[in-house]
Length: 116
Length: 111
Image 1 (tube, each protein chain N blue to C red):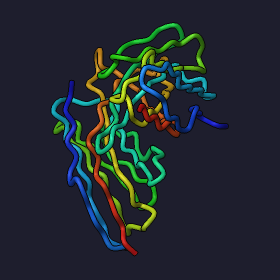
Image 2 (image 1 turned 90 degrees about the vertical axis):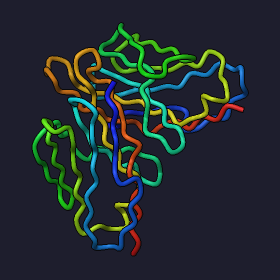
Image 3 (image 1 turned 60 degrees about the vertical axis):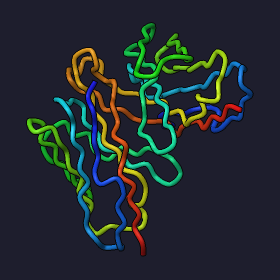
Image 4 (image 1 turned 180 degrees about the horizontal axis):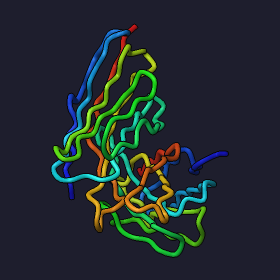
């Protein structure tokens, strides 16, 4: 069981380019999340999806978009990358469906993105 | 949203020492979790502990939800315990599942 996989592991990107970070989970979790971690800071939520077909905005959504076509995949797209989007991006998932009040999140290995 | 304050920000220990890390929340918190980020950047789940006390080997955690804080105890520390420890939680309601993280405690354990 792989859990959560993210790709690429790292990427250097020119400003203005479009980039999609991939996230796949094999645990059949209903909810998925994208966070970013900047140097010296904790993680901040970008976007989330409570179930396939739905998405919502987190704390820092500007410049990012997501889609949730199926249960397993939750890609994060930077339409036109800017240097301030240089960060480590973590995908997470949780099995909260039908479990009132329960939401334990599990994290992928992260993608280190540098925008020049 | 809720504010999360972790203390201390940095902690240096000799191998074998014990330590207590604290996490304070500005408001009622749900789905409280503790994580260890190892030197390779991986986030490892330590405890899911919205209330009460749990233990896992040398680590234990206690959350007092009514007083809005949680404690992580590390006993007989080892060099492999080094890294950053984060607590996180959500405010419930419309913020359900939207974790807010603390700034972390950087732990260094020397041999």
